[in-house]
Image (cartoon, rainbow, N blue to C red; front, top):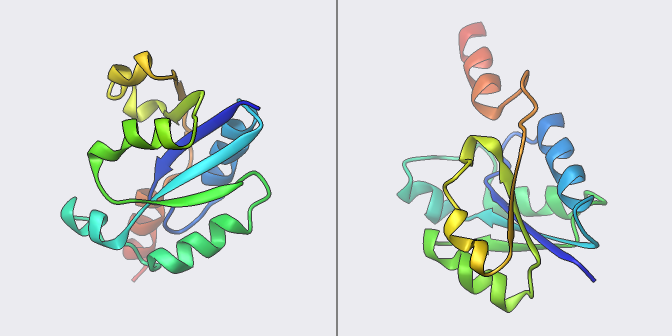
Length: 130
């Protein structure tokens, strides 16, 4: 069984997220999604519209996702790879090169983002309408 992991906040879930999860799952047999906790986001200066629990419930309802775990620190990635026996670490290409140091633990893949959609864009569009 090939195991894949990806990380993210997955706030304001949209078709770009779904497409990413679908392509992550296509890289293996079992997809682990490490979901940024509310506390971790706060430390990054981010605030999600939906709580961690709501975002987790939405991700768990998606057929491509096998397991959702909390992302609580930047440093946990190597431990997650070992603990969940990960074969492939997958992120969007906006993170290209940032996780190359994990290549000794598993394959690192950067997938192209869906260009016409992002959570930031949705928030900006909604804000402009107000």
